[in-house]
Length: 89
Image (cartoon, rainbow, N blue to C red; front, side, top):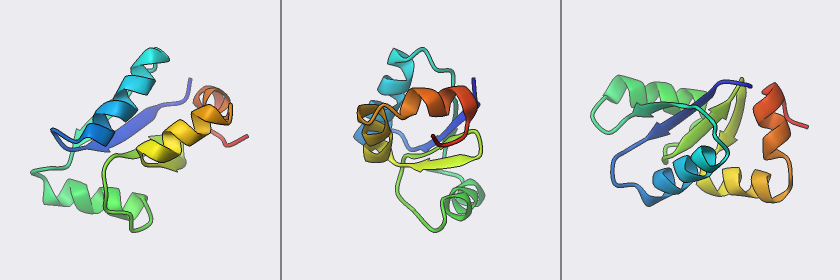
């Protein structure tokens, strides 16, 4: 399974929903709280090609985007293959 990283802030409902979907799929993920760490937030923005909102989700080397993007991948049947390989289908 590809490594999953998610950049979040506390009390963000979209962050919670994204993590909930990953947990339902029994996916382990590494979470980074960017709420109090300016350097970490800048790293997230750089990795996310300028996107500043949370969550920002990465599966393998693939930038998925935010919560809506994660759910759209799931609805299209593309999330499970991405989780397996880390590469878009």
